Amino acid sequence: MPDLLAHALFAYALGLLLSWRYAWLSPAYVTVVMAGAFVPDLSKAELLVPSTAVEAALGVPFDWFALHTAGGVFVAIALGATVVARAERGRVAALLSVGAVSHLLADGLLLKPSGRSYAIGWPVSQYHPPTPGLYLSTQPDPAVAAAAFAAAVWLATRYRRGSE
Image 1: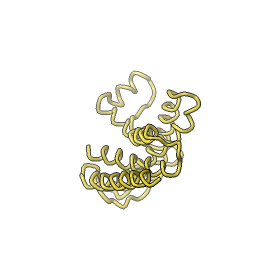
Image 2: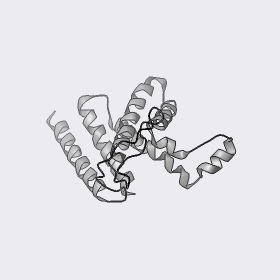
Image 3: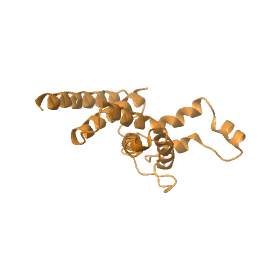
Image 4: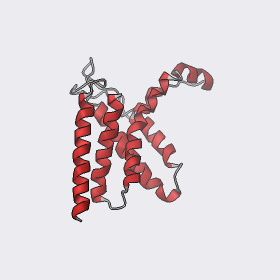
């Protein structure tokens, strides 16, 4: 759970920082960035419905982990953008992408026994980039750091809005 919280807090801070530059980026849009940070973890559906069950039902090869890659994120964001009004689709897709990319980049820093991350760029590339191994997803440290970062950006945002 600290992993999901860290992704949400980091995306929140990124959304607020973007709102400094783009006046149209309201709190509702910041929430869209946060929702985008959850997209790669849709692969956790594996816990409820095993990939083998979906594969048997569909009759084609299937793996939930594909949602935790660039290709899976692209498909999920494209589908997600279709549920909003046509005029908002570009902004929503871009903001979901910001959150999802922040998630993938943060996961690229995880400590792995092999010293290499997963194939983040799949299906374009099967390359497993080296990881610096900064932390485990179960450690609370990244969530604490993300909370401090989010709090600092939130305070700075309040200060900026108060001085305008």
